[in-house]
Image 1: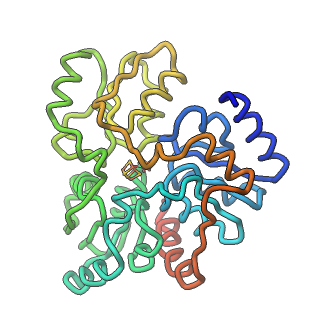
Image 2: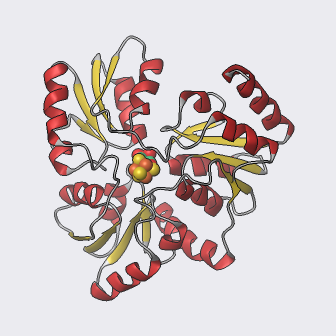
Length: 305
Ligand code: 13P
Ligand code: SF4
């Protein structure tokens, strides 16, 4: 089958079986093209909750499919590729967080949305990369234990000097691997380009950026800017997608190592198999997990996230 034939069959099955397809922006183009919604993981979960369809396929990684299920427990949520995990989201288990809470009893535990649902059950509030600063600023209490990303945590801490932050070792292996020398090299090659960077990168990289923001923040900034050239400091698919969206501008990857193999685990054929009912994994969360993890999301919504 050609890519076009597979896409057409997915679109046909999607309609016939009343399926909503979500694709995170780090997915490949041929997958974004057949999705009902594309974007950040939390934005996708909200759109899926509003969509009328009974079945949702999440093309992304496991914590994203779990977040969809948290917001739409009555729907059948399918993770497109069961092997697609996120090493950052899965780096702590519940017992580690309980131990940290004993160590820092007067701290509020803030969980980046890139955590497992199990971890969310023992945290106080969730944040996304776009809402983290606003939510942490509005929270009661000035002592914050921020998990699991030290780099996003340090970025948030810098904007809120009046609060005290505690971090544990950890972060996104893809973004954190970018070295400041990559910035020097990209600036040398593209002296007129603006550098747009995700806050999952190390401070030595974010400090040199013209703009720091979430994936959708970076995309919106580049699309709305009068500038013509951009160095993209997040997963390399974003530079590619932006190049299609803005053919008159130029987008360069900050580093060729900025590739998330987990986000790339899903293939178009995986999506077809999910639609045919022969692939993917149906996400199941027990009622206690749903109730307790949902509190963490509800607190984020209450604080304006
Ligand atoms: P956002 O899309 O929320 O910016 O997160 C980036 C990321 O690492 C997703 O896995
Ligand atoms: Fe996880 Fe990083 Fe991949 Fe996002 S880019 S899914 S945080 S490993």
